[in-house]
Length: 354
Image (cartoon, rainbow, N blue to C red):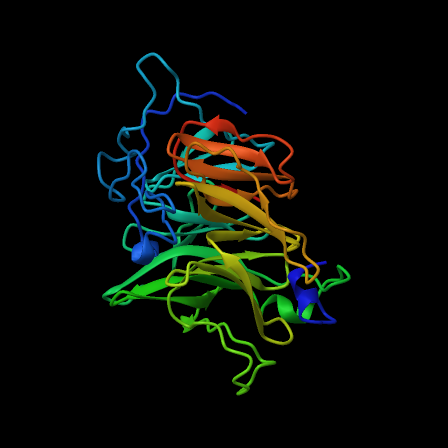
C-alpha cells in the first residue's frame, strides 16, 4: 500500500578504480538548521565531513580531498552497472558504472529522472540543469534569481494508480522538478515543470482541514530536502526548525502526514517505506518505517553506529539503502537484517539510477 492509500484515494562492489580527484561540495541551503538537516559536506548533526570544500574549487576535474586513502591504497569507486549506484561529489566528476564521468561543469545534488534517462542537478552557476547520463546535452532548466540559492532537486512523477494501472492524464501534470530555494535565510520548497516553465512555490497543505482550527496546516517555510517516490506524486521532505519529516500528497486530495523527528528523508521506489536520519547518542542513524496508516514501528538500521550515516537513498528494488559516511558510502539491507557495509571510499551524495 502506498502513501496514496493513507488519504483514501481511489487513483493511487566493489569495483576498484583509482580516482585521481574528487572534491566535495559545500553545504547548500540545507544548513539553515545544522542540527536538523545536512547538505553534502556536513553530517545531519552539523559536523563537517572530511574533505568538504566549496563546489568547483581546485583544478579542473577536481582536486584531492582530505579523506583520500593512505599512500599505496586504491580508492574504491563502488559503483557498477548492476548495482545502479551513482555518487556526486560537488565537482564536475560523478562516479557511476565503475568509472568517473566528467560532466564538464560542477554537479551538485544530482538526481535521476524516473526512467533513468536524464539527470538534474544544481550547476556551477547555481541554476537548475538537466543532462544526459554521460554529461552531454546539458541544458539550463531554470535560472535562480539573484540572492536566492537552490539545492537538492528531486523528480516528482505520477505514473500509476493504487492498482498499478497507468494514469496518462496525470503524467505531465506531475512531471516536475521539486527543490529547495533559500532567500534571506528562509527555506521553502519550489517546483518547475521538467520540460521547462515558471518556478512556483510548492505549498504543502491539508485539503481536509480547510479552515478547521482543529486540523492544523503544515509549516510553509523551513522546508527542504524533498524526495519523490512511489509514482503517485508523493513528496517526502524535512522541516528544519521542527526537525520533523513529512510526506505531502496532492494526487487527488491534498494531505500532509507528519512522520516524526528526523531529517533527509527518502521514499522507497514503491512509496511504501520511508528512510530518514535521526541523531541517537551522538551519531546520525538511519531509520525506516512504513508509510501506511497501519504502519509498523520504526526500525533503526544502524543501531550500533559509531559514525554518522546521512543522505540515504533507496536501491531500485527497494531492498538496499545507501548512505554517506565521513569515510565514503555504506549500504545496508532495508529490512535491517545485516550491519552496514562500506562499498566506496568516495564521500559524496549517493543516488541510485532507476
